[in-house]
Length: 376
Image (cartoon, rainbow, N blue to C red; front, side, top):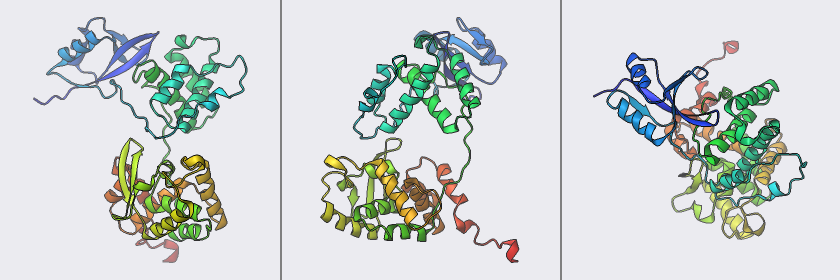
């Protein structure tokens, strides 16, 4: 039997109480069945039916709507989306901060949960900073008394103060982490409106510009870092976590492990890069990681960014060049050379070709057959 009715379960936290939200398009049958649920209430502010969040009520919902409507639980049951990177958790900076006595620090359980979930150190710093600013905005309110209306007011303040879209998103994520991960209330504030993402095109270099950056970099280690980022389309974090065993010269591939979304993948290994890597290995003798810093630890992320920026400046590239620019360039150059979008998606580790399609907007092959009207 095909069901044409859908109900999405939502988590809501109102006046310090947990509720199940029943979200559906208005339908006489669904409304009648919903009104028959025990302790059901209509929330005018969120335009949604509410039911006390108990295991018994969840069972009642499934029994009531069985054979009548599909129950979508994708927004209700917890999913862990952390990157699970193999980084050493750095909490020293939190303890060593010189802060005023009246400053409200991030709760200890918040830090412990970030550590448990294996969030990257950059994410930890971002979450702690954003959440503490949120807490200190409500200095006179106990943390357990802060409600969703307070949070909405805080978001409105950020917008009024012209905070960037990325900062507002970070603030939302840091707040959601506390209520959903620390207190165990998944998707409590799912209805917080996020800034609409702008559709900005990636910055891309020409093949000649990339080759100039590589050829003019005399330091062998630095040259290998730039070449590896570009020739494999790697994210900076993926480069830093590469181990010697990840370079497969027999199959001419690089094995990327535990990348974004906890995924493994293979990407291309350049013949030119392999030759440089062999020279690099003989000179630097890394032990575990392909690019090591002090004490055999992975190379510094800021150092990689500085190497790329310096190389771009040396060949007089006016664009703002980052390690991710080389990844964008890798994908665009493959597309321009005729590589199928599906293969590029696999090499980049994207979940969907929709993410990879952005490069069709910057690939020059799309415009080669079009004659400029000025030249007609």
